[in-house]
Amino acid sequence: MIIKTQNEVTESVLSEIDRAPDARFREVMSAAAKHLHAFVRETRLTEAEFQKACAYIATLGQLSNASHNEVVLIAGSLGVSALVCLQNNGDRGRRETTANLLGPFWRANSPRTENGASLVRSPTPGEPIFVTAYVEDLEGRPVPDAEVDVWHTSGAGIYENQDPTQADMNLRGKFTTDANGAFGFRSVKPAGYPIPIDGPAGDFVRATNRHHYRPAHLHFLIYKPGFKTLISQIYVNDDERLDSDVQFGVTRALIGDYVRHDNGRAPAPDVEPPWYSLDYTFPMEAGEARLPRPPIK
Ligand SMILES: [Fe+2]
Image 1 (cartoon, rainbow, N blue to C red):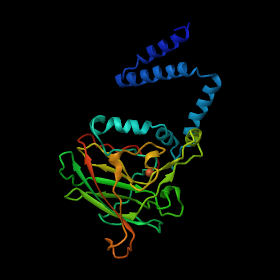
Image 2: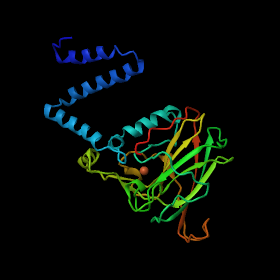
Image 3: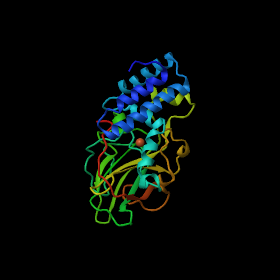
Image 4: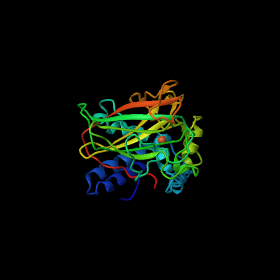
């Protein structure tokens, strides 16, 4: 179509998208085109701003590599990741859920780890923590034989893939729930951490005068055929940034009761107080078991 007015640009694009045979593709891309065009009109986007935006988006890709995912960082910093999660879990957003963001640091093929064993694979700063968790269905029945990936930062707030002083796969492990739906492990209490701010996501956060930290958390990914894969993070209740997470991830259901023990014997003989314990139960919805695409290798 020969374009006569600016409104005809939108009509023309939409009519071309309408040719696509895939109905969901038509739905998603038509909405994307409509909203993008509306955004350009509402903001009266200038040519210089458009060029800047294109360069910004190109940089998101250029800075992403095997160990860093800038696209996931900006999606989180804009709250898009949190919105997609809450819209697709908890009976499609109708009730509270323990689902949460995958984040940019999940790696496939975590080492198989016995229930109760330690995730500490090289000397790691941090206070000892003992975690006992249960996986159950929505009726409260145990879910045995679920595969559970766990990953988290050290007490210094750094993931092993960001830290040459940590062993490969330190503070990562893969567990299988027992007949009671239980799994557990020993580790160090995670610390909150700054998201990387040397790229466009950092530019965005700085421009809003926010801090660029995530509150401390443990990551979980629970997989069993017949259930919707549950991706979760359980936040540390004494973290001062629970209500200002740079990635907008914290909901009430996800704040764990991390109990500090200043007295009493720890579950392991080599541990002196203070130590921490966490008990938590993950309810799983029926649905499709599907593993996400690992954001890093
Ligand atoms: Fe994290």
